[in-house]
Image 1 (cartoon, helix red, strand yellow):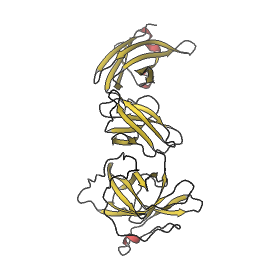
Image 2 (cartoon, rainbow, N blue to C red):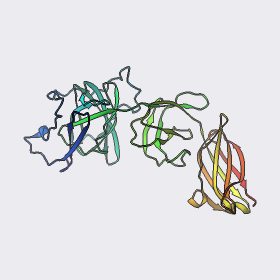
Image 3 (cartoon, one colour):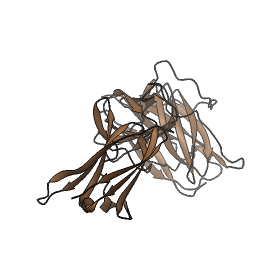
Image 4 (cartoon, helix red, strand yellow):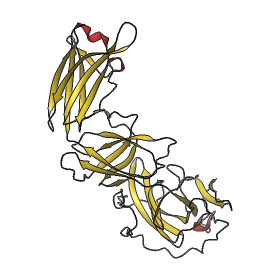
Length: 359
């Protein structure tokens, strides 16, 4: 066990606010064991610790949303040194004080040298207990208390636990659901991954922070810490990614259509190619033109010069008709269209398209 860490204690105010304090720990003396630094809320008073209950993974209750994380999987090495991680689970609804959660479950994600595993802890009469490796950090993947999906505002990412009790105060948040379907057949998709995105254009890479990993539709989003609506990239194996704008503070249920993926190479030629500033792709779907690869700029490394041409290699494009537009600026700095073309893509296809700018 590490020599130092943090202890989570709770202070419950009558006005309904809650804060958790993390306290440094020292290596416990053998005779103190699990009683070190036990934290108890002042009001209401939790019951005395109960005997540990089996940490089975019960089926969701009827009024709970469909889980978006896989069933808990544990792949710890057989010689891992395990430690107890447990404490109290409180529920704080809007305008009220924290109260003991009678039932619920918390899916913890343990992190060991980059490897992540899910461990589910049942909440019974306000308590939870689970065993985790002593060298693991802990994140909360998802949690449900008394049928409410909750977040824990005061638990830091990759918390470094010890065997002392912690107090987790869960705050309900609005449910945001993405019904991810095949664009042609409208059938629900599996292995859906949702990432943070920088804007409305579908990404050319998968570097964004993962929000949901390999879930089955419908995807119930976890809480996303943000002060403004956020762009999310939604993808599935064999499909082109699509970006959607989501406000985590507002409940919502929307359909997200994904189309099979293709690849596109655009070669811009002609004496006027040096005027090119941006290459924009518009996806033609239901009489709408949605930019899926906007802001491709040669000066930002999105193209390479090859034998008198600027070459844009664009993977992960939806297998649909597209309009390709080259934009530049005129002599007074106004944005102008330099050239355009149209291309139809089939699933899995690799297409080469030429776009010529003569002046």
